[in-house]
Image (cartoon, rainbow, N blue to C red; front, top):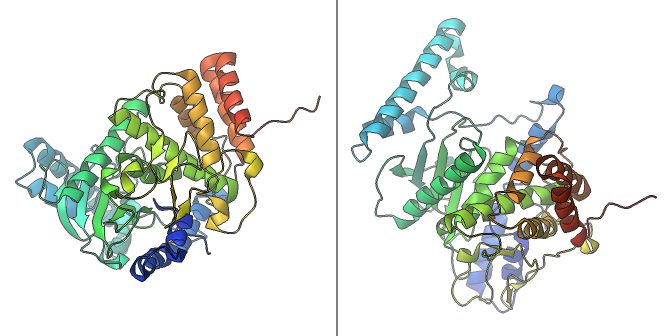
Length: 423
């Protein structure tokens, strides 16, 4: 099967649904549809990370230009005039809209009227918002990206609306943003208060949710027989938005071990968001990713388990969780971009073991080590598990001394990522 862009539900699970004789023709057809749609995103994610990880002198060669890196005028205008929004939010939206218009006017004056078509792109960097804006739209079951984001349902500062999926997407995006802001002093996705756009009700019974890197927004399907409830899973939303954060910290090439680390980073920060929302210590938490997404009747507890990879589900209708928990079981594969969803369970368990050994809240020490590692500039685009392990050990020593480094090294050793001695 061809590799694809990241989404909440891994391709091996969708593929199992599509092939299992225990499922009806309707279910198998629906799963194939989800797989086919996912494949269309391959070029996007590859193009994005090819651009982000290329040598500086080659950037731009892939043709990737980030979109929506500033707040769209139409969104700010809507917020500034919305009667359901409080006065403070309206005032901030008017301020940011005025600032962007001033930047655009100065650019046009300097470059001439012929450059108007390039105004938004050229003005993106100077036009930094002081507030992060959220907006949720109704995709109205379209599968055409050109129709996104859709019709506006709820915007920053607006009270809850009648659409529960919209409210969940809005509130949980806020939980993710507050986690990054409060714990790591990171503003929105890009540390520049980038707007967070979401579209709900995508596709017809679409059993997935994903971050689209080219239109820079979250997209949620409604789910079907086995998989759904994506907007209510804060760890899933944390996972997907973290893919965008990774683009702005240590871009990891989305293939092989570096791709598995890309997935691992998203699982790690997604699970910390969930634990913070539920006010759980590392010891109290269940370490299950996407437990909200399995529908009643499914024999399983979640999409993945960081505590015990390979045990999240075992259902004849889509098989057994295939994630290994030790590097000794790592095998080269062409599927799933080199097993990016499959082998993320190995570093996932290393983080779990680290957090348990340190105790307390997972973001206090283990999470801080991982975050500072991503900020260190020591993570190469084609990073291997061993390189990442070494970087986290070095950062642990810097932050928490020899004892901290020993804790992290022991965790990596337990999952088979062992630095060999040549003595």
